[in-house]
Each structure stands twice: as C-alpha cells, then as structure tokens.
Image (spheres, helix red, strand yellow):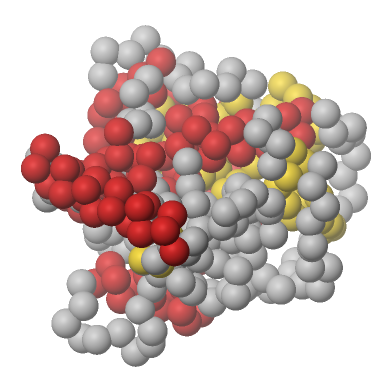
Length: 327
C-alpha cells in the first residue's frame, strides 16, 4: 500500500459534528492506487451498521460536499466514508489532475470492498452516494457491483456525455468531436516533447464577470468562495488538457436499465445540469423490469450547487428514508 501524507487536523469546509466520531482511513483499489477517506461513525451505536460510501463532485475533494453528505448521514445513523478518488486530493496515483471512467468506477468498488470487511458494517447493507460527475460514476458502479443495495445520485452529471457532446449536446457532431480530439492529441504531443501538460478548467477568480454564464458564476462562488480548498482541482488549476480524454468515447450509463437495486436521482429544477438526471432516469426505467424501485426527485427552484452545501435545500430526510428502506 502506498504511503500517503494525510492531514490529521480538521480542514473541512464545514463544521465538525459532535454527534459522530471521525478518523482517516486508507484502502487500495485493484490498480494498486491507495485511496484516502474520512470515516464518520455515529456515536453510541453498537452492532453492525448500514454503510454508505460518498464521492464527488468531479474534481472536488472529500473536505468539501462529499464530506458534508457523509457526516450528515452518519448523524442519521449510518457508518459513512467520503473518499478522494485516484489522482486527487490526499489519495495516491500519478500523474495528478487525471480522471478515468474505468479507474473512477473502480474507486467506488474499492470503497465497497473496504466497507464490506469492517467489523461494524453489515456487508448486506451497503449503499453509495455520488455527487455531480460522481453521480454518473455511481450509476455506472451500481450497474456493475451487485453488492450495492442502494444508490443516490445528487445533481448528477454524465461526464461521458458532456465531454463528447458539450453542454446541452451543443457539440454533438462528428466534426465537433474530431476537432476536440485533434486538439487534445496535439496537446499530448506537445506534453511529451516538453514533459509538462497545459492546464485547463478550474473556476474563475472572484468576483466573476457579470457577463459569465450563471453556472460558471455558481461553480466559482462555491469553489473559489465558500468552499475553497487548497487540494480541490476545481478550486485551483483544473485538469490537464487531456485529463478527461477517455470519457469521450466510453458512455458510462449504457446498462443502467439493468440495475436491480434501488436508485434515487435528485436534481434542482433550475440547475443547468438537470437534463442529465431527467434523461438518465428515463433511460434507466425504459423497458426495464426493475423500474419500481427507481425515483427521480426534482427540487423546486434549486440550482446546481444548492445540492452541494445548502442544508435548507438538500433533502436529507428523503435521502435518509431512501437508504433506511433499501439497506
């Protein structure tokens, strides 16, 4: 197991709860990458508990909203972990600023591996929560891992779709994809020659220009403002120019209508990304034998990042009852 440098002081973007115990843990995925996680355990509970692994948003770290979700669900009686994916945050993996539909799906499965062997976890009662881009990864994992009994995807992105087609499918053509792939392959050649990749993405410094799209302002005010964290890709420099290249031709939601376990999709009505959850739910339930335990919950007036940290908007009562009923 790779030796990681873990921060032992509380450096989250949310307050520490007195209702749960917290500790750092590590585990290894099948690619040999060691992942770092925060474990939250409800105080004064005995026996084997239902457990939930949480990750996301895409490019975020466990000190941001995945940790908030994990701690809150632990307050409600679940043993939880919020983990940094491969190549990100305190987790291992080189080079940094990279992502992979396969490796990131494996990250979730490795989290299930870890939870399944804990003495205080019931291995038959394990669920996962994916936020933003990790909502799509969570659905992909649920379609693959039969140990997962319930999955919640909050303010979901389908990262394969947005990389291949652009926002709102505005670049959904062979020509547009060719030009993107051409630019990324030119970046690969340049990087191999120079030994360094150019960086793209990240969020805009505050204050965001008034003529910016709302979702850019929304992201930036979260990552650069109220939830800034030094290890978060979105808070800082973003990705390498080819960091998400493999998402372009690997659709991750291919077999979601074969998911037998329970799924809850949650999205804000006014989120720019709401179409991802609506279309994913339609595809998941179309001609499916297993549609009865699938649910789409649209939150009135909510925008994308409301489901990151707005405790007045995130439907934790619903999330709690969903996992209690299905774990």
